[in-house]
Image (tube, rainbow, N blue to C red):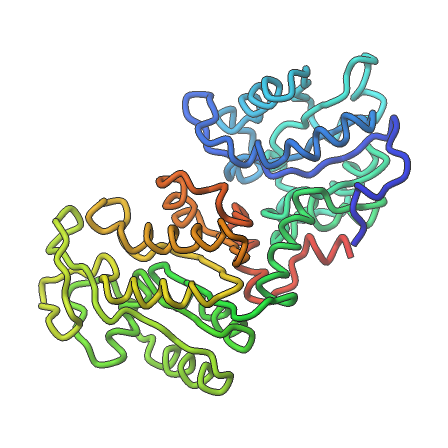
Length: 392
């Protein structure tokens, strides 16, 4: 996979740059700028190289129809302010665009094509659409790792028609994920949460042979607590998972991977309740398990202490209520402490996990924070992502 940084001459080259600027919008304003901040390095790099930049991105799911509420205009304005440079948003039908129409003024350096998902051909991975897009530029750069699990025209098919390169953020993401999948420094630990164990079984099965520890927290831990013969009250729990959990424990035993799950918990009678520490044997029928208990926290902290690499995906409890946030906060603080003396490499993914870290203002104290969502999870599962395959 070639990186655009290694290209010898980008002066006056027209670059078709695929970005993920799918950010939350409210009343025409960007409410979370994380994804915009992440693409600043590639924009800055191409500006300095004196390239002409055509940005392709999407917002939301317009399903092949024009939807003014999902226009890229607020994102253009936000980015304009960040880079202090004028950006032109082209609303014209892409099929009618020609290369010579895009940079009419010598001062034009960045143009945005309107939301690429306004065209049904994008999600259909349409070959004619990809070919037409390719005809607008000299080179293609994918700096949208978070879209690269999609077989879409501007991610997958387009590389058949243009010299194609990975972007700066794309390479950073891949390198971080390699550190928890192929280029591992052991001991390595995975802390995994979320409500459903079935949605992450592919990841768990792929990681067990490579990991020393898998720690289950959050809703999915309730299934393991139940499987081990304990009560879970009225806690969130997935049905018909016994075979999945049995397979997890058998596989872990075969590969000497230690499975850890809560041995004490914090419960409430409802989501807004105060917390009460309980041993598993003391859980009542009307209890809701909403966090891990102090014994479990200490156990996890001790595992983090001996780990050299850590992957964290999914909070330990219902952190939205501060009474049930201590498990997640303590995990975060334990990783940060090791990060301070550079004795651990930490990779974090998942919106809720990132929200936890943001609440304690520790986002800069982790080695890599992935906002890639589905692409992050599919990579961990060992799947070949269409965007990576296309670049290779």
